[in-house]
Image (cartoon, rainbow, N blue to C red):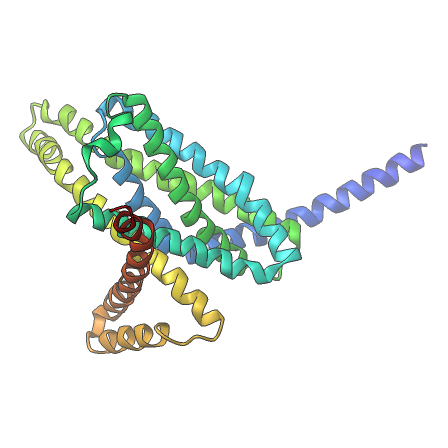
Length: 311
């Protein structure tokens, strides 16, 4: 019995050594995967504050908390096991699913643009206009649905970064990335939406420079949040359009991806030290145009055609 126990302890010690030696590799892989997903992370942070616009200050952090929990559930409960299963059983299904998610983001972004020119009639929202709790619930649900698509892209990028790793390591990397990015994104969102409250505190300071900074935050945050809401809508279009274009390229359809890449590279080549920024901006603009066109088609199908048919 003692011999068996000693052998078991030896095995456990050996496993612990292997785990310890691979920990650095796993952490490095998670860092690499997070870096590759950084673009989508920034878009996620830009999109989320749009859902907080118009709510009372006391409800901002609770709403951020609800969305963050929903985001974590998206990543760890739905996307992580789903991504691992798909990568094992049906890797061919990942691209079409991502393209469908991209199309949904395009639809959401185009719908917001559509509402600028054709606002919904007041009667459309009458059922929830007098119920703040229902409005909050609807906004949180919408934000979590959008997060599901953005999180899906983050997890897909992360999975591609460790595609050759054993499945357990892939799972650990995806979990680390999911938790870390959720904390980063929604921590940043919480700081952004509460900056004006911090400004009120600073504005009461007896030190002139600190008080001026506080007043600047108080007066500057409302227009900044409105600007960020616009950036969030644009992010839906360029991320969704980019996902769709990348998916087409994966199926051998060169356009419009080839033209977007060529224009971005050409613009970057003419701008010297600003080349990386200009290349990204032109690429994002091209993807955004594709996203707006695709989303506009879906909006037309979902809204304009039924309304015309109803007359």
